[in-house]
Length: 269
Length: 263
Image (cartoon, rainbow over all chains, first blue to last red; front, side):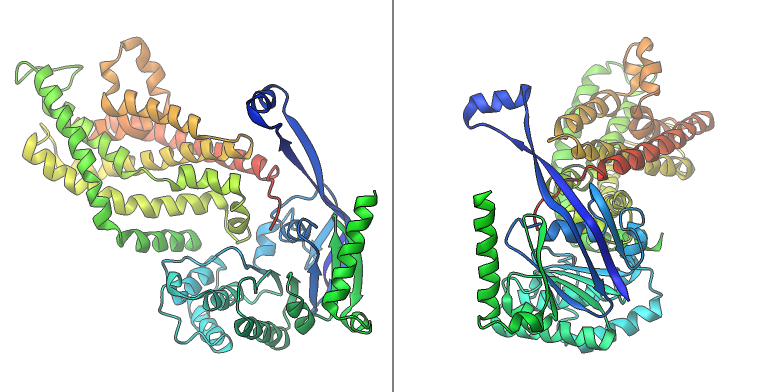
């Protein structure tokens, strides 16, 4: 069953440009120079229930913009998007109850509160009944081994501990799809491996569909069965991990080669 | 509503930790009030004299109440924070939850002033009673009507401040508009009651947020009358409806223009 479907999804940003110096500043007041940047240029793909998909690409490729359109935060300029049969642009709030998001570079937890208070907070935000919240906190505490961290204010946790809590908080409402944007960024190899194990475990036990963006090949290699590479707002590869591994080169080298080829193509244009 | 109540309680829990810091802010309030006490002592030559219909005690208490509203309701959440969320793109991480962003900000703000305001109110009552004496003809029972008006005034103030911050969807910096609004409220309704100004301006002031935000609630405390109370309450309800409509309209239009590039 398809949980995500996009057809010719596109998004263009308008970026103000200014010539250098005072002259440029004055000019920008009377004749602002606005340039259009096509962040996503008509991408189409589907994701099936229970899949762990790697959605990768170099910086500025359009990964985060795509996630933001899938979660209803940004409005697409063109094309269609459906997540769990819901159009995120029209029913963002309804969709929010069924998806979870973890942005590795952004905190969603309230830092002055303890993880326990945060979980209760997010439980209430997602309209979960009181008695169910307690049960869910116990479940997540077991899965993510948070027992000793529950009563320490989040500001006192290490990055690895915080990411574990972030993931647990994003799962409090049992989302059907989890969007992970660089979940292991800045973590040491041991913690990274723990997080990967937890994502796999969550996928197996809760059948959560995972949409992962990461620059870490280890994340992709250990977790994903399918990979989509985007560059310059377009999909340049959509293949199974099994097929990718048939190549003589390592996954990292293969991805690097694809990035370089794309860069050469862009320069030639 | 439960989720907004939880946001409110969470902010309340955070702010209670800083109650001591909030009380320290009372020093600047006290200096300001001390200046006004001396100013009005100089202006009122005779003890029973009336200026614009106010006795000296009423006039000083009026300033003390409006300044308490000004200090107790100030917050960066509805001004700089909301504008920075929009300009910096942090809003996208707040929008992907099943709540309305504007109500989330208002719930946070309410959690903030609910800690600040009672501290300022307590310190104001102590200072006022010691330095000025009681409000003439004041009956504590009138607070039952005046306090809801005071809360409505703070909420209306927050709605308009947030509307200005939401302009950040279109403009680079909403601070100049915040400054203009603040100065209007401060000069016309906070430092002086509107009766001080020429009569021809009263109609204009009564139709502005000044009447519902600071003048109305403070006037009800220093010089209560049931007619005035009904008048203020009716104006506040109209402003509340208009403010909510404006806020949802600006947000609905603005969020479609949201520009957040990068991860």
